[in-house]
Image (cartoon, rainbow, N blue to C red; front, top):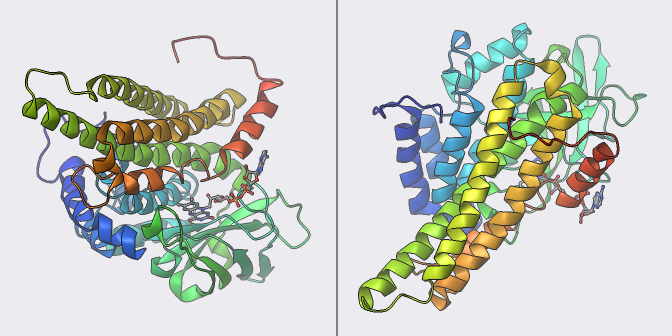
Length: 393
Ligand SMILES: Cc1cc2nc3c(=O)[nH]c(=O)nc-3n(C[C@H](O)[C@H](O)[C@H](O)COP(=O)(O)OP(=O)(O)OC[C@H]3O[C@@H](n4cnc5c(N)ncnc54)[C@H](O)[C@@H]3O)c2cc1C
């Protein structure tokens, strides 16, 4: 990992640990009430974690994707909804950091994000298109210096709590559905009217309600690069990696609970191996596989970052898709395994070994951009892409 060797009081890890402590304290209430994790987000702001990815010359701390993935995992071990809010905010920042540093408006926006600890949401999903990120129905209209957009945004996590939204659309009303742009709208430049209430199985605290979005802003707020490039070069990789960081965190906490359960059983009967011990060894193997997968994905992204051709290559896209598929599927297997270890104490709510929240949160991973859609995308690339056969990365 990319952290300073010494964990000082103001290192990223120490600051995230303080946030995680607060997030863990409220995790069950956030889940049961399906409410925004306000305490955890306040703590993120107090620890100034919302601007860490932004370059130093714009006031940030230039944290790497690897640094941020570790924080996502730490928060994921405490409260998956808080961790996912943090991850989604950082995914939006990655688009600004990688593609907005040449624009005066976007640089000033990044300075404001650091100074005011603004929380940024994402609106890519659209009624009639679903999770097909690389297509839009809605189109931005440019009228002189002003742009206007109306979108049936069926899922915007923490939409009611965000200070700004980055939103996709077609680049003009005659554009093809895949000719898209990404625009930043500030809170006082849009209205959102709730169309769907987020009452879900898991990830309840992300408050990912649906909204009819209507915005009007200066046209300079449209990111200058086509969304196709933004998606390929920063958004897809950072989404798959930071989401995987959160999911790994859910799995780590589930395995910790199972380990505590087995240890308690071993203490009770020191002469007999607890029945769950073998399963614990099996699940630790699965957890290590997820970790290796995410770590390798992070390394591939950090290595490719300096090389635009590599970032846009099929090999890189296949690798990132595979990180997402493997981590989203394996965490379900892991949490299920930990449930078998803890038995009824894991199934019940309110015990030190409860795993219901973990299981429900983990189920969102396969749907967060449907694995079927991602596999379909990978399978098309594999028709022409030469298989990666090397262990050297
Ligand atoms: C916790 C959480 C937070 C989210 N936050 C946001 C947010 O902040 N902003 C945002 O914009 N979105 C957000 N989303 C939406 C998310 O990222 C997905 O885009 C969305 O959930 C997909 O919805 P869907 O399953 O209806 O759509 P689809 O992807 O359209 O899938 C519908 C069904 O069709 C099948 N299918 C679709 N395409 C294919 C294909 N090519 N091949 C085979 N089968 C296919 C799938 O298996 C699926 O069963 C969030 C989702 C979750 C779970």
